[in-house]
Every structure is written in C-alpha cells, then in structure tokens.
Figure 1: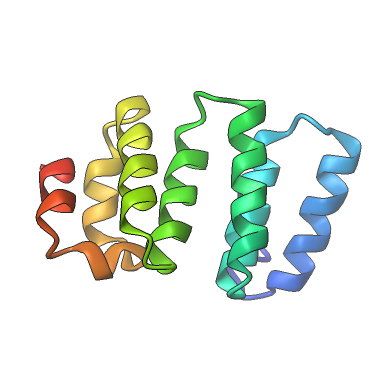
Figure 2: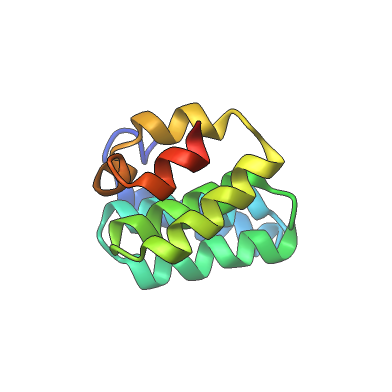
Length: 117
C-alpha cells in the first residue's frame, strides 16, 4: 500500500524488514524491486527480482517485474526473454503487458507483438 501511495522509501524499509523476518519471502523481494524501480534504481531492482526468482523459480510476477525493468532500461532481448517466461507461467501477463507503460517502448515492436498475441 505504501508503494501505491508513492511512499517508496517507506515501502522499501518495510520490505527490508519482511525479508529479515522471512528470508525466503519471494513476493517481498519482488515488491521491493518494484519500489526500487519506481525510484529509478534499476540495478538494485533487478537484484531483488532475481532474488525472488531464485527463491521461487515459478513466480510469474517476479519474471514479469524483471522484464519490466529490462524494458525500462531499453534492453529488449532480456525484457522479451523474461516476459516470455512470465507468460509461460501465467498467460494473463500477455494482456497486462499490452497496457503496461513499462513496455511502452516495445508496444510497436514486432517481436513484442508476437509474444503477446
């Protein structure tokens, strides 16, 4: 909720505490990565998403969020690779990606279009 209220720094502190209490809490790592990404701290965000995926390899949201960060960094290859994995795990991410501003730079890309068809 704090992150949704644009209180990203506070959210980061809560996620930090959550993983201290439960080190295998993949969702907290991924949400922490989202908050970092909203602050433009992309390297740190990618580390948190990768940790979430390491803890829970079938966590589609972690793959999707990692794809978002790669897209924001204009790394098309990695963005599409991670988005593909997210979609394999949860096909609903096809529709989400079509509207997600994080992928705006790829919306007209033919490879992106094929992936989300």
